[in-house]
Image (tube, chains in turn green, cyan):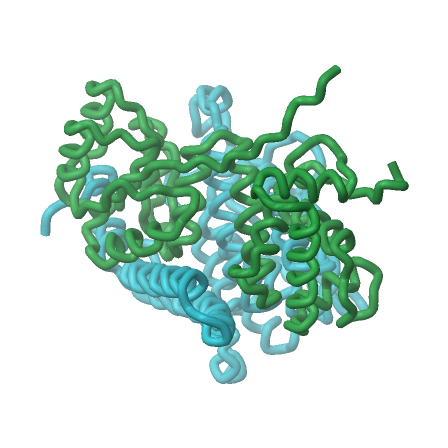
Amino acid sequence: MPQEEFVYQPGKVGLILADSDERICRLAALYAQDHSSVELCAAVGSARDLLELVQRGLRPQVLVLDSLLSDLRPAWFVQQLARMEYHPQIIVTGTENLRRWNESFLEIGIQSFVVKPYGMEELFAEVYRQGANPAMWAGYCVRERYRELMYSMKCSRRLSGWKYLERILLRTTLDPENLIAKELYLYVAEEQRTTVRAVTAALQRVSASLCEGKTDAYAILCRSAGKPVGSRLSNLELISVLTEELTRTIPLPARTVKKEKDR
Amino acid sequence: MSDGFFDALWQSPEEKLALRGGLKGRLAGEFCLLQAQVDALMQQLDQYAPDPVRSTALDILVEMKKSLAVVERLADHAAKLALGRTAAQYRRAPADAMCDLIGYLQAFAACANEELAASRSKMRVEAPQGTGSFWVAADEALLDDLLANLISNAAANGATRVALHCTQQKHFVYEDDSRGPEDWAADLLRDGRVDQRIVEGGFVGLLIVRMAFESLGWGLIWPEQPQGGGLRLEFCPVVEELEKTTPPVILLEDDTIKRYIREQRLHRALQRELVATLGQ
């Protein structure tokens, strides 16, 4: 039986944010500039402005409304969207003092709530979770956790191996097929239009950079790989321990990476 | 002052005040802005700053995020205590708030174990077994405060196991294998006596615990404490007789969203407490 080809396309989720605090709108716009998964179509100061944009044809998957918006009633607002045959995912932001919000949301068709104080990271993650399908969301979780890990190990994003390793880890965590290392390198090389040799060399540079960083997070990786703290991990060891770490902290099916001879 | 987007939903002036400009609301708004600023700055540095500026600045910002989380938790505790003193009725459970304590404790234990595992703690929380119900009059936000602070305290005091269960006498029992309470902590929990050491040491977590079960209207039986360490607390909840007080329709309610909201809220409460004790 031919194997289904693994294709991971992150895909973007569109968003309109409505918040009467202009500073939040500005920060969201700044944060969205370099966000690979969420596209901020507009950030407006009132629910009425948001509705106008929708009437003019802007229809992203997700709307974020702050609970302090003072110009519209929620039930009426949701009705207006339905009249335009537009059924986005709606997220409301507010303080946890909104004790009765759960029942009220059910009544008016709002799906999610983000409690203040939230960060942009948290808000954008919820936007993506609501707007994306489960496979896209699983990929998002892997990429965000990978980014956090690489932050904590002081690895520069500019190393080409950073991107290659991300692609490999997406595959080892999300693809049901267990692959040998060589296949993984080939997969990334083809996808990124480079050579296997360039991929392995770039991964070695990442490994060297992590080792030089001498961080606590890297020490944990070394211990997980069964090597003395501070030693340099091979490409395969690096992929294996990072896959393990990602599947440990994200609810995904565990995968293993094998050497060719193990197969 | 014009009504907000959701103001029509709130009945009492206290709730409106808390929503719009109360102490907790204002703190939450300002912390929200600070966190958003740090996130945006981190992203800009990560994308555009050259090394080693990038690396050094990101280190500082990561530390700053941790500090923000700790300060935010302290500010939230302070606001809760201030509200508890000045507007006790605000903290009281609404008359119609009912909770199946067994279901709640099972959800709490599941969330707590996930958060503890994520922070590499060896401590585990055991929930009551079975599918039975135990209906009590309780605002779940107060239960979150009560248990998240007890768990965080247990983790800080070296506990490896916390057990939560309900007795046949319709009491709720909390047990852990920590080093056990200091005298001043026992005095506070048992009698509400605030020792100078609590004020000096800034041990606000136990003050929140005391305030939470008082606000719930629950009694506390102080049983004999385990030999060789550990803490055991036996609470007497306000028990609801389901058949007398509520129509049977509640049993047919689809609670998927409610459960999702509860989980989201519990994770948040636990993360906030554990960040201070386990330094996630």
